[in-house]
Amino acid sequence: QVQLVESGGGLVQAGGSLRLSCAASGTSLSVNAMAWYRQAPGKQRELVASISSGGITDYADSVKGRFTISRDNAKNTVYLEMNSLKPEDTAVYYCNKLVYRLSWGQGTQVTVSS
Image (cartoon, rainbow, N blue to C red):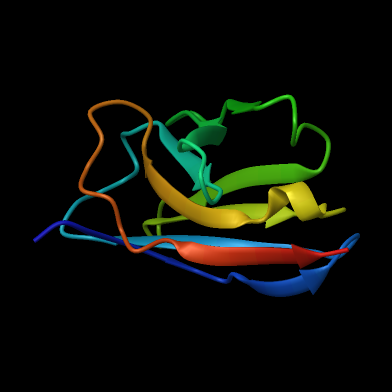
């Protein structure tokens, strides 16, 4: 059974940092472009950052310079380092393939207080 499990979220003050992790089971992430998405209350899910199988990264303008996506293929895990967090970053964060997405995991809640 393919499963994506996100972790690392929490409550942090504005300006703080968090590191999210996404561990996969039942499938290998190494050959896939992976991405982090987020969904704030009342809003659609949006793409935050992506990383190709070769390590090329891309970011939404809203997080560029503050967030860093990375991957450890040996651990079958994708990470999202988030710095200089803002209240508008508050959302549930999910990871998934960039294309041909798998079933969504439960996500991890990130709350940034002002």
